[in-house]
Amino acid sequence: MSDEFRSGHVAIVGRPSVGKSTLLNRLVGHRISITSRKPQTTRHRIVGVLTESGRQFAFVDTPGFQTRHRSRLNDRLNRTVTTSLADVDVVVLVVDAARLTDADRAVSALIPPTLPAIAAVNKVDALAAPRELLPRLAELATWRDFAAIVPVSAEKGVAFDALKDEIARHLPLSPALYDADTLTDRDERFLAAELIREKIFRLLGEELPYATTVTIERFVEEGRLRRIAAVVLVDKAGQRAILLGKGGATMKTIATRAREDMEALFGGKVFLEVFVRVRRNWAATDASLARLGYE
Image 1 (tube, rainbow, N blue to C red):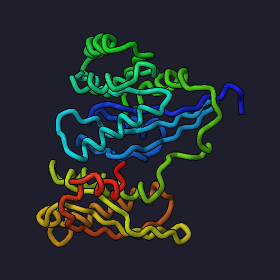
Image 2: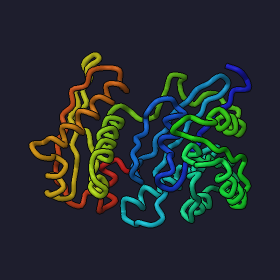
Image 3: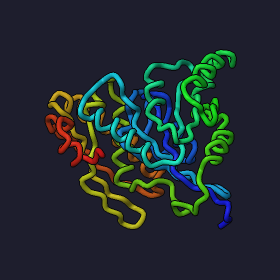
């Protein structure tokens, strides 16, 4: 490996709904972080690894930093964001090209002044005219001394080479942190649970997805076949009824779509069972959240 090889951790931060997970998936080239149009879909720190000639990026996707709705779960997710910033080499602040908010500025203020920060101005493809971007770029430049400000589109893959080049300039000279074929630091059990949770966010209403979490009770590999038993936890019996749907139809759709994505990601056949159980106040205490895998 070249003496000039660069490798390091890159935190991707931002308020909810700016496209952090879509950006990570586009950078890595695989859908390892779940996405939906609803805010606060991401609840866990997940590393996506991209290895290229002379450089390796370990992108750290984080939950959207929540400044409005306080709960024990959101406080824990916010702590995940701030903890992630303590052990990275570069930070990418993702903002929406359509508007900057006080929440964006609050996230920017969390970034330690000693860390190189790059602003990724996302969703430029949604602007009616390029000139609409100019006021946002000017305002961003007043927030801090960004190492670079790069307009991008995570959805369309616009300007990703430029973004990677700007990040790589600030990675330390270092051997690779991960094997060249590594995509993520998370195992298949975690990814399976996340794909089920993604379908809940995509297929159900505005409120119910936030009252759910997913755990994996059984994960058995038999050659290229995986047998998975998952449990969706809800707070109330009424939520369970909605999640199941008439005759179990809603849950069947969620499980089918999740299984199809698992088979594509894992490269083999998946036999998936999903159960729905009521566990009141599953997110009410730190101890309960820790048992469910929330850092």
